[in-house]
Image (tube, rainbow, N blue to C red; front, side, top):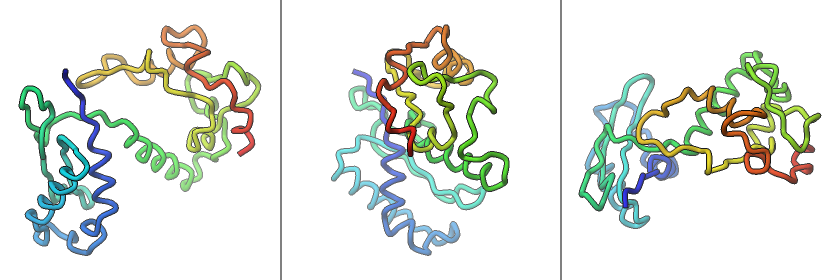
Length: 194
């Protein structure tokens, strides 16, 4: 069985919550002790039963450290390399939220703005067609949009269709991936009052 590893998130959480990243030891490349990082990551992988991961540390626009550990596929003994592709999964939430908050700080959006004012297509919750979905709702998971794994793809590498095309086909009535029963939560009235 070929398993896709979603480990990047775990290593970031491990490093973020560790004293390694919190310390001032990483102010420049010359102060990094690769042995300490390797030991720490290998110990965490063993204790958490993590089969493989790739990680890096960047300061500004420079990658000052990177490492690859364990296996991308245990069954065929394929090791993780720095170039190994991982599914980004929920790690994208922090990137998206950060970008959205930067737009907010620059005064380009308001958190209670309807997303349809900014999209080239309209997203309408089928059970609440008169309630506008806002950026705040997206950030707080209160929009009622949900993952429907029947239509969410599992690709090795890049998705063969543009993300905007997929979203429109997933969220707009008549789209080839649209499913009003499974792409949207049914009972979310309480969420709209957050």
